Image: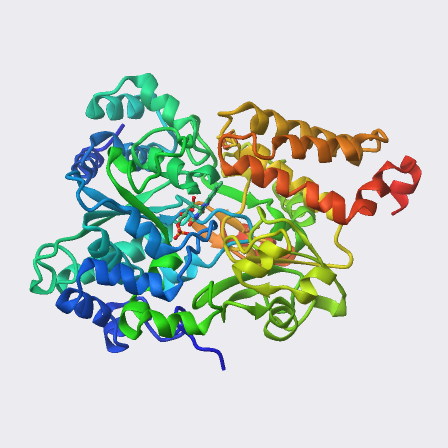
Length: 423
Length: 154
Ligand SMILES: Cc1cc2nc3c(=O)[nH]c(=O)nc-3n(C[C@H](O)[C@H](O)[C@H](O)COP(=O)(O)O)c2cc1C
Ligand code: SF4
Ligand code: FES
């Protein structure tokens, strides 16, 4: 039995209602923090937990909060990243739908830690039905004195505003998100300065993912050491893995950090559909470099192991591909994604993704030139590190490792057209 | 026409933010809900409330794929084309949908009932293939399932 931390309440009746949350010990972490912990102690506990961001970059959460300057006279903001748009990722949605109060309590704790009195939840516009659930949860919390003025008679104030996005993957990137929240086009900002110092409206801002924040109440309640011990030393706790693709039982699984990927696929998800064999896995959302079946066999789900395999844990999305998968087509589709979602600000990404798409297309319709595969690899290598924001790198990662590991899948399209048609 | 109620809702939206301009996206959503698309009048109204120019608002709106400048079908179908849906047979199923509707992606039925757009991942990859029609998610789609859904929307 693995310990359920984030998903503990998912299957309870009316799990989204405050009555359920409170009956399960909800808002006790808030009581504990407001009743006897300083903001510094809250941050210390989160640091001890080895909680790392669940949005994609995996930055240590306690450290991020610590970067928010305490002596800055400007207002401070905590902004929740509920943009969830990385292909393959569908785990924040479950928290928002079934356990919104865990997020609200996490927001309260984070806000207390950094000295924020106004928080915003930036939620992707397509998640429209979740906005009602969130608004209801916020109203319930306010009614019971967990939000608003003088929360639990501690003197601490906090309000939360839910803010819809409008369909732009790039707005999941934290600085684009802030631009968008300011009512502008979602172009990424240059870092540094980092949002912790110059964020929303030029004020110190912490941007955190939904799951990251929902993980904080149990850390405060049961201690950072307990949480850390659930995972590996450097990647603390458990996290939600969203598994999709060719498995028998796709879905969201809460597992400890360091869990074997093979076990997740074969046991938890019931193995590959239709008795097929595994060909490849993308382990962290479509931006993570692809793993071969052999690499997937030895991967464990923690930041360190996937970094060693030159991939990443990213958003915790696991996309599983069986032996019949056309890696070339999968790769092409991901390139089209980046082409579509490139904000167009910088040339390597805007033009690079477009060129790669065109080359994929020409190879696919039988007009590929012998050098095209190397050209694709070169283009992606050229984009790497030269784009203004990580989206450019991600589009390179979606292609170059796939060519390196599955070159045959690309070459088969360069054979005479008749053979392509027959395959 | 933007209703008086929507007009008031816009003022409430503005009041929620320390800087007015932040209310723009929520206000654009409201205009679209009222008018079916972003009308010139709607954009003008937002601009005047936010002390911005028409171009400021129009230019910002054009960044976001959920906003459109012309009427769409009564049922707006957003078909997910991203990786997990594709792996689970999404492309073939989209062709089925297209043949049922008699239109291709990017088009609208002549009676204005359905419009079909391909979009990127909508966060339902574990129940792929999927589509969104207006605000509703339809997941674990099959050809027969699609037929039933279209029938129910007649
Ligand atoms: C192109 C791009 C898209 C991103 N999309 C998301 C997203 O949808 N949700 C999210 O939480 N983080 C996303 N991120 C990561 C955020 O920039 C940021 O690291 C995260 O919100 C920080 O929160 P965390 O530390 O709690 O993970 C994205 C990053 C990039 C570069
Ligand atoms: S890398 Fe792409 S998404 Fe990022 S700023 Fe440049 S064009 Fe925009
Ligand atoms: S890939 Fe279709 S919903 Fe995510």
